[in-house]
Image (tube, rainbow over all chains, first blue to last red; front, top):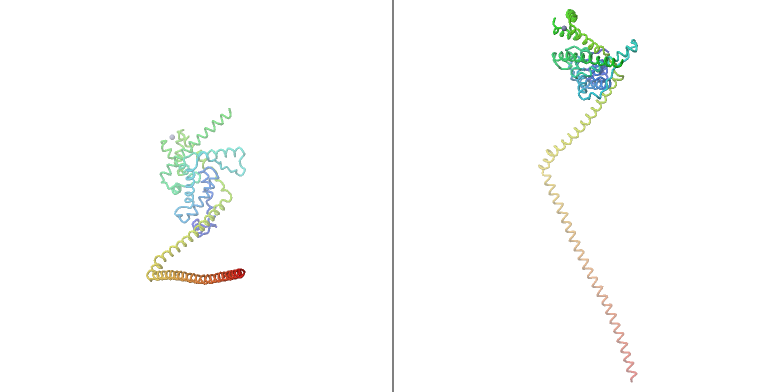
Length: 191
Length: 193
Ligand SMILES: [Zn+2]
């Protein structure tokens, strides 16, 4: 069952479509969650993840084993996300908080606060320019290394560091701003 | 330590690439510098909020959907490929036939003189047919002429016979009339006397 990625890829290339199911099982969480945080809603994230796996399958013969499979799969996924972000009109897209109830440890108030916070962060991510968004998600949500991000984006270390620096600043500013707005709204509401 | 250096340490901190000593330096600076402290706290809050975003469950039946589309696409590709192979095969056959015609069969016919023979045969056949037609025409006209002559002959004979009968009849009548007249004349003369 614990066949290496390369073994599975070779079986797929030999015509065993079912073997690809194992690869999907292994990487679907990372792919789907990256797509979700990039796009901000489940529907687009699922469509893009499916399309990403189909593209991965169709280009398995071009996979270079020098890179981790995860890196290569995320490269295809983020490229699809960036294409879709470029095409869409910002106003028309619904934002999904992606909220899932945890196993009942929290009180309803805690759940509500957690949900609001997640929605606020996702909105802040959506406001970032696409090329900064990608770096932030890969580093702080997928916990990838600089080297992996360089492989995925094809950018130099300097650019990766630079973008990440700018992206963090932008996220911080956006979140501080939205916090102030929320406070102002709360004060107005209390009057 | 300067704020600029602290700023680098803040970045190293969030890169998860910072030593214990550097963390100590950073915190020590922040105690004295509210600006850097605020920067650090705000950043820490924002990035931990991002890092704490939950990993979502992938929707049900995800693998099955992907595998299904892959199979469908493969089937469509195979179908299109076999169609293309068929078309190429047929096209190849047509090209082969054309090449055979223009480079093998036609030169062979030309070289072997079959074409000339065929031409002669056709000319011979055509002239033969024309000859036959002309003969038939002549024969027909001759027969018609003969028939016409025959008819004329028969007609004349018939006319002659009819004329003879008519003359005979007229002659007989005249003879009878004259005989009666003579008889009347004779009786008249006899009465006078
Ligand atoms: Zn400072």
